[in-house]
Structure formats: structure tokens, C-alpha cells
Length: 309
Image (cartoon, rainbow, N blue to C red; front, side, top):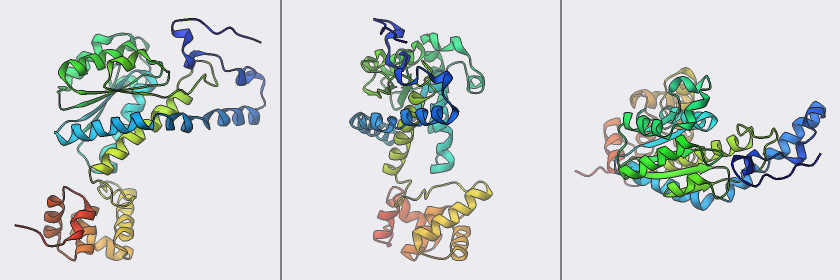
């Protein structure tokens, strides 16, 4: 079955085109179907790799926003919006930041995360209202996600972001996306036609999730939230995270788990403080001073364990 490539409009977007490799999807045996999906997914990482230079610029913009006291604000509709919210809500427990430092906004409000509000994506003015409600300022960085690259809500968010002087970043899954012209940094991940035609929760969703992971993880590494590859600012708020925090301290300081647990208790449950206590040979108060003087970077704090007055 052959299909002509549409010439213009939404139907011309690569994310909307029919994938010739999955034309017989409905007649494939289950294992063949899954192997085909897996083969399509395998190309997502290489598509993301093509945009590393733009992702680098985005990280630099977000880091600079945080250094001037600004926030990272994800905004989008549908799956794209949900992915931004998902990344935002994971940052406080992972990196020990306040819940207001990374925000996720989805068209249609919080209820749209669990239940689709389809018409919400068509209203650019609503994006301005939603950003105004969180008091968007020039200090902030706005990351608008839209797989199609032309969602009115996401475009409205970038227009308003630019109007107030915020750093603006666009993430889309089509080349020459309309959303790109409204952003300081345009990240375009060309994931191609989906396994299920037009279902951008698949490859496009995976690509957007990968980019969000990179943005926040790299930003937090550059903000001193990581020592080696350990999340040393993790907030031990449940049994799993308490156990993880102990293992992080044990690995970072090369000590056994009971010693790590005792250090963690003495540090008020803060792994980073416990690590500096052990590696610099100081008490909790001095460790906190050393961390403050090193802007939260463990490696710098333990280089010279003598606090300055």
C-alpha cells in the first residue's frame, strides 16, 4: 500500500507521516511487532545526539538562569506537557532542591496530567495566563515542549517568555519547526514517522524525555548537586531513599554502611555534609561552612578542609 507524502500543513510533519516499515502493524505476530517497535526506538538516541550542541546551549542558559536566582519552567500540552511535569517533580527528591526551583506546567491545568484536555493546546493566551500565575520573570528559563513544533499553547509560552525577557528554549521533533523561531535556543529532534502513525507519545515522547533528563541532570551537576556520579543532595524522605543516602555516603567516603549511617545521622540526614565530614575530617558545622564556601561543591570543599573566616 503506497501513500503520497502530503505537501503542507500538519499532515506534512514527519511525526505525522505513515511509517512504511510498520504498514502491516495490525497483521504482525506479537513478537515481530515488538521487535519492530524496538528497532524504531533504537534510532531515538542517535537523533538526540544530533542536537547535542543545541542541548549544550540550553543547559548553559538554564545554569545561568539559576545563578541569577531564576527557575526552570517546563511548559507544554498533552504528552509533551506531561513529560515536562514528570521531570520537574523528580528534581526535588533527586537533587535536594526546593519544589519551586523547577516547575512543570501543562495546558489545561494539573488535572490534565491524568486526564486529557484536548482543546487546551490550541489556546496561546492560556499559556501567558499560566506563566503569569507563577510570576514568570526575566530571571527564569522557559522550556516549551511540542512534538509537532507548532502547538499554539507552546508558542504562546515562548512569546510571553521573550516579552518578559526570560531565557526561552524550544524542544520539538520536526525540522524547521514553527516553535523554533520563538526561542533563544531551538532543540529539534527528528525522530521521523511513528510506529503508530501520529502517535507522538512513542518515539517523539521518548526523545523529549531524553532531552529533559539531560537538561536537568547536567544543570544539577554544574550546580554542585553531584559528586562523582553520586546524587549527594538526595533528600532521604522514605525508607528507600534513606538506604540510598547511606550507600551514597559509604561509596563516596569509602566507609562501611554502619559508619555511613552514623555520619548521616550526625549530618542531619544530608549526604553531602556527611561526606565532607568524613573526607575532610571535620564536624557537621564545619562541613556546612566548607560547603557554603565552595558553593556546594563537595570536591572543592574537601580540597582544603580549613574554613576561612
